[in-house]
Image 1 (cartoon, one colour):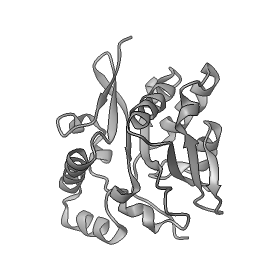
Image 2 (cartoon, one colour; image 1 turned 120 degrees about the vertical axis):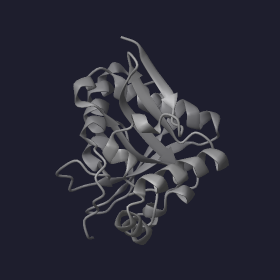
Image 3 (cartoon, rainbow, N blue to C red; image 1 turned 90 degrees about the vertical axis):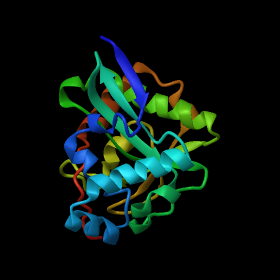
Image 4 (cartoon, one colour; image 1 turned 30 degrees about the vertical axis):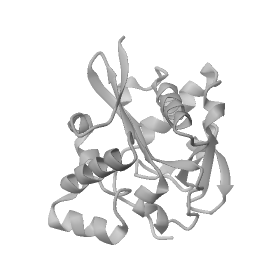
Length: 205
């Protein structure tokens, strides 16, 4: 089985699931996001966001291929590029961290260690760029696939709560710990990434 993790660019953006290419939950603030959906331009806004981040900051995601079939992806960026983050009660993300926005693995490819490979690849990328951690907002009341990652699954793969909240705690993963992970975190990571589908919902606080 040939695995490749390729930096996300405008060229391979079409390899993301359709619902993800047209979702701007994280990329725009709530008001702008609603306006983009109403205007029918979320896909253009997504492309513009990725283009801007690539030009100003650099790589902000990875696409996972198995035997040349796109089976997953991860998206991340410094909090300055993630307007939706300010809408969370546990913001802001720490200045030494990059925000894990969303990630996903196709159901048929879960349980094969891809989750661990994805996170370790992101960790190595960010360590080279001088960052110390990944932070994410978790959904403590997660019930179904949504844009916000389930808090329990983040905790299961090594994230620690840095700011608790009954609905949306902020969690942190120290990057250096990911480089020495054992096989026993694979299942938890695959469960985490497999559970995520980008649906633009954020329940009222």
